[in-house]
Every structure is written in C-alpha cells, then in structure tokens.
Image 1 (tube, rainbow, N blue to C red):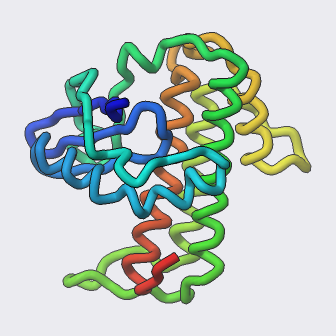
Image 2 (image 1 turned 90 degrees about the horizontal axis):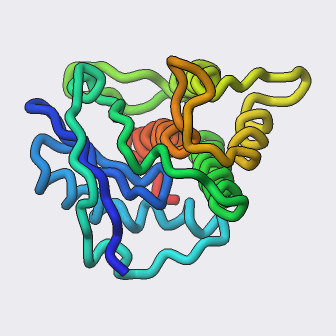
Length: 211
C-alpha cells in the first residue's frame, strides 16, 4: 500500500506528514523536497515503529500518495507543523487509539534513549546557536504540558505527564477536539510525537550519535 501523506504548504516552508505514523514528519522549502526528506528519514523513524511493535517495511516510502494539501500559516513558517486536516477529525477505533498511543510512547522512549547517550554540551551551529541537551529536554517537557491542554488533559500527580497523555489518547474515540481551542486526538498524537523526535534527531545530529 502507498504511504499516505499530508502536505502543509507555506511559501517559506512545507511539512510532509506520514498520516498513519505519528512523528514521521519532515520539513523543506518545497513540496518535492519535503517528500524526499520524509522518505530519507525512514531509517531514522524505524526504531520508533520497532519499539511500538509495528511493522514498517524496508520500502515503506517507495510509493507515496499525497492525500491532503493544507495551507500553512505563521506556525508553519516559524518551523512547526500547525495545520489540522480533515483526516485528523476521523473517529478512532479502540485499536487505532492504542496504535496512536503506542507510537507516541515510542517517540518519547527514543528521545529518552538519545538524551541518555548524548553529552550535556552539544555542538553549536555555524553562528554558535542551539540549546544544549538539558535545555532541549526542558523545552520538550514544557511543550508537552501545553499540547496536553489541547486535549483537555489534566495531570494527576504523582502521575507523569506522559502517562496521563497516553491514557487519554488510548481512551479517545471521537475525532472532535475536547474544546473550542483544542486539537483532535489524531493531530495531538502527530504533533507530540513529531516534537519529541524532531529534538531527538537534533540531539543525535549535534552530538554525532547513531542509535
């Protein structure tokens, strides 16, 4: 079967999403370049699928079908995928909800593995920019709380945020947002997994890790 992909298009940047694989998402300047980047990242996304116990064939990106083109906005141009598509409003069966949660948990676990293996100080960019490891971890944790509120998730101490969000995703059935400013569960899963993996791959690249 073809890999179903959604494109989020802005004049400055395009994101390509693998719709059935939360977290597998790459940006580039053009549609063709974004699709190429998505295919190139198959080997880097495979550990997420493996950890979730889901088969991802060697040629999973050989046949790509673009099923949605969404208009990007300022969030897209800034560097984060922000468009919610029609497919994100599809209802979830119990099995689909479990799969979404499994992949989100796997993305978090891959990030944790990368962080554990990385040095505290990461290589800087050409102009000396970029957060070090612990600052990236703090940034991701802070974003998770903001994202969770989009599904009306409330953490119950001492449960960690990850456990609370995962439980909410597993219980999700409706494709509708929890509130007027909320996100549909499918989109929330994709956004959370993307953010964790985007920073995991950043840490790998800036510390010469190969996990």
